[in-house]
Length: 549
Image (cartoon, rainbow, N blue to C red):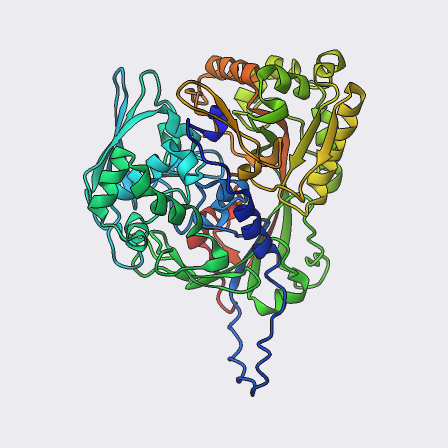
């Protein structure tokens, strides 16, 4: 599964226990605690002013969107306005250059190159400059996923990143025949503050660059640990989580609520709002709506919005349902029962995508189409062109599926999620006649780090991890998840050929488009729905409340 997880020889055992502990802490953080000191109670602080608020379906577990935890929990929802991308994905799929961060020049050739020039005014919220070391760290995390627990599949296409410590220019050099998807590199929440990570690890920036270039594992081990866990929000570290974007984190409350403040050191246009509250998945919005001035919500389908009273006089909130560009799919571990293309093909043959999509639609309260392609969203020209490929893999082929008869497949997801549970149940029902037992293992595994994986030494001897899952149900964007794919959306024949190759290896099984539910307050201007990874908050810094709010 190098395509999806970008794994390399020597990948460490996934830190399953730690990832589960992080998510458990986030989900259960609302539990009340008392000091038990028996002393006099401190006076209550003055009430917070009502603020503009974004409600999300993400647990807000981390601001590192490039790690296994972040990729599994939609960290881009928050991280995109803290660590902006080189190219912003707009609501219509357009890729908008982020010149506040970098400009890029492509140099064609057998090994295509992209020369990036960092904006000389680009600065972190602690005053440190943005340098190529930040980008080098992101790239090397992707090429050493076993060390960093990273999820940056496209780095498999890169031969090298040339960077001198502290420089404002660097060059990305692609492997021969690669580079078509260069705009997908350095996405939201993936370029983190290397200077702050180095300081916490006790190395200089020059020492960090030397270790990254040499891939000095021993020197990089503490760096990787900080990169991987230091941005978890259950233990917010303001000295580490400094921001290069229009907002910075002011604080994280015990219930997982994040308060963003305008980043006064941001070199671009200042954010319109001086502060934005971000609520995590599971927030009781009905009981808290009086705390805020206006609510913008971005949910996956099925999240209740009964706190919106559309028929009340003076209501300013509107609900919008959309079919998302992301595709809900099973990411398959390459160890254990699904370790071979033949076993994965047999399992895929018992998955009834139309039945899974119907289960999702029922719980979402909106129709979503079944999907049997991975690289383009529902309804796009590429998806329509790939219809023959999709049709060949929709539905059930019991004779082929029976090759896996007697096997048990454990599927996890970030729960509790009744809609995902119904989708797994639909898979269980369609696979049962083939003799394949499908188990909802969401209590045992919730992230990509929980998958059973195989690594190989230089003699190709396998080592199987002790992951709790054979597959993870998760929504992934179609743009940058497959390291072997080197086509763009205007190459329809290339897209079809790439889909056919992916159906030969089967690193994932596409199921259905992701349903999305948005709530927009008409008193907030410049809110533009976006169903991509960053969601409706992609331009949060432009949101502006009407006077009097």
